Length: 149
Image (cartoon, one colour):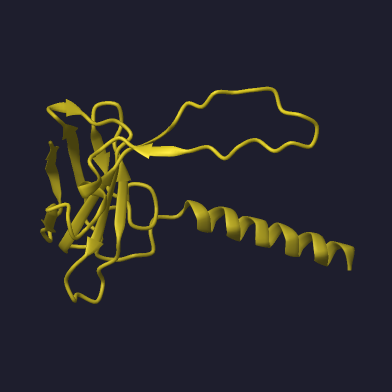
């Protein structure tokens, strides 16, 4: 019985490990890479989100985060796996934690919640106001440029 439990545990562990590291289970994803700028400068740590606008059966939301040069790669299920071809509305946000004055905490006193602030104009956080859209072709795209003002 002890060996059966050990074998079952090892089998489950291997299945979980290999399952988590496998390629995306979504067929039809294509590459989508680009860059985001704000007032002409690279917009590092910006969060780019694609929301499907079409009625296509395979479309799903996708997102990416800009690196220090403003470059991003979109993800649907697993890091960098791409997006489904189709039409999307786009939102872009860049949240940063606000610096708050710190004081020593008393016994059993909880830390105040951290507050964040979007460093981009709020219109870019709303799919109805951003004015940003994208159509991803069947071949994918590597030259997306979002220039925010």
